Length: 253
Length: 311
Image (cartoon, rainbow over all chains, first blue to last red):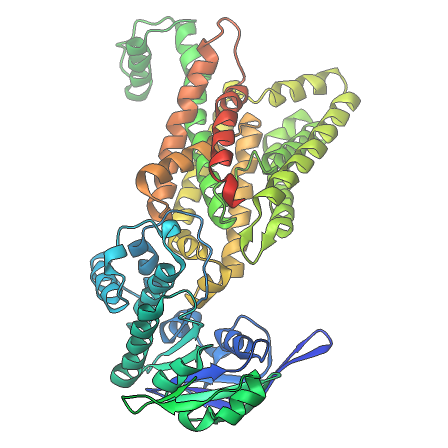
């Protein structure tokens, strides 16, 4: 396992926030975190990202996250934010280059890598565009490229956390981004944990899916077994029907 | 007094090389060595300090409008300086004023940072309001101390308050020089981290940066720089705002080049401003702080209008 979580709990003031007894993410797989709003998906992701204080243990490659050297950890764990505030007019390529902050790399190598990851993230054409002027979706792809650069020198399989990575993308971009993420998992051994709202994206791209409700893990399984019409009705309150499309894939409608 | 530039330069060369090329009289040489040269050098170093600190503060606050003068850090440092002038005997003010100015500036920086910080950077509105409140408080304290002072202390206070580089002497020049060089070095070491901080604190942490340590170090260094600049030359506002903004427009916001270029341009700008302040209303002399405010304030308003939609 790349990521293992044991007895994780968070208490927000007096209310219960999150309680995850035993959960993990393995190498080469895309894990989708599913659940309705307030189920604890983003909270769980923030715990793994180290943005919240928690009780329990979160280990990356069997070493507790707090015991990693912060620079080495940054080479193995990257977080794609939903939105980023940046008031200064960096070019998109400069924002991507910030991904090299924890890396030991010369300027020339950074430039070459920036070009490579920007083409992977399909935002090469934005290279010289001013970041503040980009659309939400373009910004997301620039940050995706930045995360790829950040993980490019990992010597163990890295962990990539995605917080609603497709929220600002149009339909075609959503699919190309998730295809790219799945390819990274399958071909380069990335372990990916993604908060997804679109259940069909989870069905199509995720290897594993975890359903959260009221801060607890309800079930962890393949998305095909997890996302039955009955569960969708119970947890999302939507009377879904499952059909098989012409490619033989299950689709919720 | 008018001294020809060539003769002045020759006189400096004479002093350094032990030669006798210059045709200036002894009292003219004294003017160069005791007044003009220290003042020129001090202007450059104070300009460097202010411009660098402005640029770092804008990065730290993730806000291009954060100028140490505008948000009240300079006022805090001024209160520190004035308290030192009032409470310490004149023989001790050479170190007491800068130290006390640093303490005042540091307290204000910390206070403003805590006040204006939110998960989305800092609010311009809170920054400016905090600046107004702190400046008002600072001026009332300075006023009170002036009121309580006897004649000789009042003279010292007034001289210092005019915010001018005329009081340049070897001690101030050395202090400003060491601080400007030290800050230039330390800021350069932290420039890449400061770039990452612009993405947001959480993002910077994900990139492996110890954000708390970075913030504390930068706040202390900025307070040191601003405190020293204020102790040496009074409140000179807008240099820290105009210069980094200008460099960003030309060269982009990357701190690795923004900081040294701002230092360079800040030094040149304050030197030019001081020359203008000295010559514009001859034989009277404008305090240079008044001149930078006169030119900088309209610039600030234009900048504010530009980002109004985003405030």
